[in-house]
Each structure stands twice: as C-alpha cells, then as structure tokens.
Length: 553
Image (cartoon, rainbow, N blue to C red; front, side):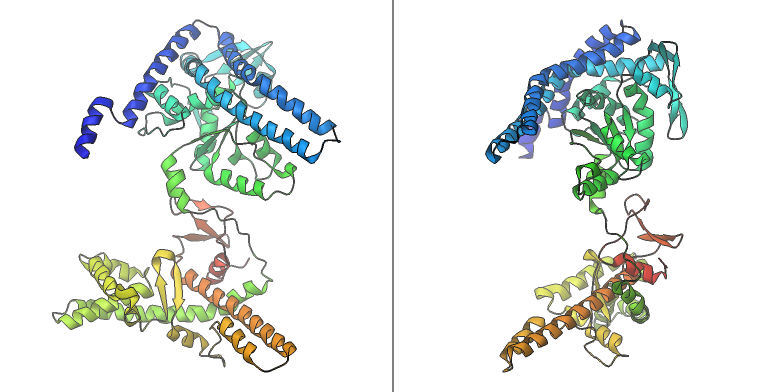
C-alpha cells in the first residue's frame, strides 16, 4: 500500500502540494491587480475597497430586501396566524442561508483584487513615511484616538509608525508569494503551517480583510491576551486605512458596552478563553440586551494546534465562589485537620516503604526483589507525586519495573490489586485524579468519633427495601425513609468534602497547579504557565485548596 501511495504522489502529489498548485493561478491574478492598483492614488486605492464592498452588497441586495419585507409583515400585521408567522420566519432563515452562500461565492470572485489591495497598502506603508488622503468622518474620529492619523484641513495624514504591544514600530512588511498562498489557504478554511519568522500574522491580514468586506464580522483567535492586543495594534492600521473598524475584546471588561462594541467591529481580536466565556455568558443571558457577541461569521485561529488541541484539554472553569457562611464551606475547614493528619500518616508510611523498596529491589533474593517491587507499586498508588519516588523512578529500569508489577497485580480484572495496596490509607488513581479511601483510612478518620460508619455511605437502596419489609404503619415507614435519606445526604456531603480535601493535599501542588497571591488561590494554566485570572476549580475543589492553604476569603 505504501508503494502505491508513493507512485500516486509522483503523478498527482499529496494534498498539501495540490492545494499550493491550485493557489498559484490566484497569485498571478493578485499580481495583475497589484500592477493596476500601483498606478492609483492613495484615494484611488481606498476607493477600490468601497467598490468591492458594493459588489458584495449588490450581490445580496435582493435577499435582504425580501428579509426586510418579511420582517415588516411580521412586525406590522398582528392578524397573522401562528402558521403564517412560522412560514415567514422559515423564509427568513432560508434567505439568510442564501445570503451566506452568495457572499461566499462573491468573495471567491473578488479575492484576487482584495488581496492586491492589502498588499499594495502594505507596500505603500513600507515605502512612504506619510500617506495623504481625503479625510473621511472615520479618519477624523480616528485622529482623536490614534496618534498615527492627523487631520490637516480636508486631508488625513497617515503615518507608517505606531505603537504595538508596548513598542513603537515602523511598518516594513510586504506580502511575498508564499504569504499570498497562505492567505488563500486560510480563506478556504484550511490550516496553513508556517515556520516562525515566515510572517503568519501578516498572512492573516489577507483573508481577514477579504471577509471583513462583507460587514458581518471577522474574529482572530489568539493564545494569550498579549498577542491579541499586540496584533490588533500592529495590523490594525492596515485595515483602518480602508475604513474598517478594529478592536480587541481583551482590552474591555466582560459584559460591558465596550466589549459589545468590540464584537460589533469589522475585525475583532481576542483570546480563545475570552471568546469561550463570552459565548457561555451569552447563552445564560436572560434578555437580548445582555448579549455581547453577534452572529458568528468567519474566524481565523492563530497557533491552531495550541488552541484546538492543547488548550482543549483544560476545560473552561466557570464556577463561582461559595459564601464562607455556607455549611459546605464550613465542612472544609472542619475536616481539614483530619485530612491533614491522614495525609501526613500516609506520607510517613510511603517514606518508610520507599526506603524498604529500594533495599529489597537491590537484593539478589528473587522473593525480596518481588516484595520491593510490590512496595514500589504501593508507594506509587499511595502518593504518585512524592518527589523522592519520582526521583527514584527516573533511575534506569525503575519505570519498567513499576509497569511490569502493576500489570501483574491488575491481571484478571484487578484480582490481586488489594494485595499491592493493603497498607495504604487511601489509593490515588493518577490518570483520572481520583482518590478512594481504604478501610484502614476510614478507621483512621473515624477513630475519634463514636460512629464507625461516620464516613461510610449507607446502602440506601438495600435499607429502603428492608424498611418496606417491616410490618409497621405507612406513616412510620415514610418517617424512616426520610431519616435514612437525610442521613445519606449528610454523609454524602461529608464524604465528598473529604475526597476534595484529599485531592487538594495529594494531587494539586502549590506553585505548579496553582499559586497563592494576595490571599487568593489562582489557577495556573498547565500549557502556558500563565495565571488564569478569575477562574475557579469546580465541585468544591477550589474551597478545599483554600482550606488547605488557610486562605481567608
């Protein structure tokens, strides 16, 4: 099969090569338009953008007129039946789909000229320190906010230097053919892979400009707020010169009018997390006035592997803090000493057993070596993040010994695993961050209570069945069931609290998974190492970590 693939590639090439070949005629058309535009004045260059916007508007005018007609009938005709109104709404939905299809077709037609407009604009900013054009209202508005635009009588003077990401830059980039190809690939909805320094940010200006001409909004998704802000400032003037409005959502507070206006811009920059949270907030809004996003149209994802693969492993955490006055939060504080004592007992046990494991593994006696391997597995099941254990497992052959031993005890559906973990107070499954108390651990926690079942959930199904068998009045049965349910609820919350506290002590490490700054527990993004401001672990885990760190909220 591999031989056949090799032969086919010789004749037809692979998918990437075919895409590039398909883009080459587009590049030649771009150059043709670029030659014509180079003869135009700066005002003529800007007029080309207005003309392209009109081409798009004219192509969908008939559909939009019909939508307006349907909407007017819906608003003005109160006598319409439910069926008639539903039919009009269905027609509007169908017309909107036709508009999207028509815009896509039109954009394909005007792509070469639109790309040429962007490239010619980049060339002029590179070759000229000042570009003078007839001032528009947008120019005048920008001049009050941006220092690279100034108004002199009826003309606007655009400088080719501006601040971006805290640094003052002078524009010095013009699109190469490979970047034109990359822009075409992105517009077609494909991934364009480019090495560092090949101008990925510049490549994006081409499809961004093209799709922004439709006036339905373009989103650029970046991996962090610095890049979002920097790129919006760095590339922004290239678009603003042609009357397009550019903004960055990360510059504005959530749910604010400023953020809503940022989404209403022709081109919107932002981080994947902020886009995600705004989408979630909009889906929880109780009125249209609370929405900040508009209909999604076209998006380009920067560092797509990081955003759609790496960051996808970290879920968006939207849980909020619980009041310190709640009973649940008091439980975390109440049981913290017990869990801390239990954790210290297990840590002391693991320390002793790891020392024993090292000696036994080095023994020439086969049985002693096997016992050492069992102790090593038990240490791993007891505290997998123990630093001494991690160091020992880094030695040659130790990880393979651990894997071999684990496979042995896991055989036949974990038949013998209980033998490997007999002395532990609790067992940690590192792969899914779960913790299970052993009978020894439950006895340890219940030692200072009068109830040996203090931390054991009752078999509520079995006990209800036993109550049903009793020869007592129905009211008394109901009372017993209520008491049983209440006891189960109390113990369930108690066990959950213990479990989350154990996770806080054993699985989540300070200065790795989280930090404590200004008396606040803040989550650290495992992919980037950046602090995730405003995020909280869900399901009580954040409160457990706060209790562990003695943070007073």
